[in-house]
Length: 521
Image (cartoon, rainbow, N blue to C red):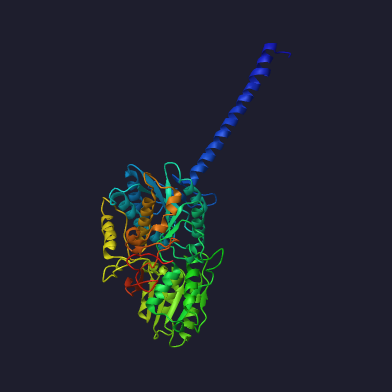
């Protein structure tokens, strides 16, 4: 310690220098910790899209449940979402929550149009429930649940919905679903397994229904749309299809476990039963896994049209089991077929309703001895002229038309551009009517809110003259499995001018239901 005093050594060697080092180290740790926290916070913020809505790991898609005016980055949904948010905020007193489960981030224009129309229909029914139901309680709060454009994130959204069944949310049902896809089937199965009632709007696949072969894989599921089997029975009864005069074209991957399509698969099965004994084996096409994409199926359809022309002169009907993109491609191919002098009628399911909005459809194909008809879920003209005396009424349809008119104003709307021809707004309105009617009927005496169990077991009573739903698409009388009995099926024809022309109401049972509307055993 030569040259330095003991005090200097003690101050510098024992106190000041180590202290500076410790303080420097501590400062470094604090900075690093702060940076780490900031990075985690920013990363978390990057995953958040809105309250209740996030981007899951590995995805840039916003999914989850929104109870705000968030419009999922889709400008066409903005007005309707804002109307719902305004209605939710106006609720005073007792309420329960209903979620509308739809692919709000859909990128395909046809699917997104479907989502918009179902959103509008659900909102109009919510407004009706809260303002035009003679003060009935509880009020209906509507939230929007997105499992992703293809439904790939269904589990994330279903988990979130289950968490909303308690607390102030009081979620009591999930409506919507829309497309009959593998992911939607998984979502419905999971929701109903957790005791949550589900009300399907436009799902038609038999595999997404209870009561098939006496089994109920989805306890608590109710549906507004007929099954594919019922639609096929109504369609062929109307068209008087015979096996000897018809051929079937179908999606060959429809029953694939990974990339299948329950809608196309069950429609194919229904058609095949009706064509038993046909002189021709059915012809298949190979669609892409994502059936909204174009793929290479036009090549398949060009070859199938040659086979159509090779059939005997008595063959005049083509049954098509597939999605709307492939349906459009097939119609375009038929417009170029070599036997344009022969008349053919193409019959298909409710996917035909997308065609009026499809800019790639060759409407001129319909001028070459080709008629395209499909089973619609609903149509605005179905109950206008000479409606049947049972199964629905012009007055019931008029109630919705009045609401639609008010939806263009500032009191109820605005809710965006309205298009009723595809039937989606009508069927979603009816599904939400079924939902709130079931919730209110399920409420026990002296109780404000029904339990989940009371709601999901209510569907077996929705029938008869007093408890059926007098829907704008027709009467909704549910059987003991939650399926609509003998539901009205509008037959619609595409015109070369780009319209969907109502032809006639057909019935799965061959005639309208009796006025009592009580399904048989």
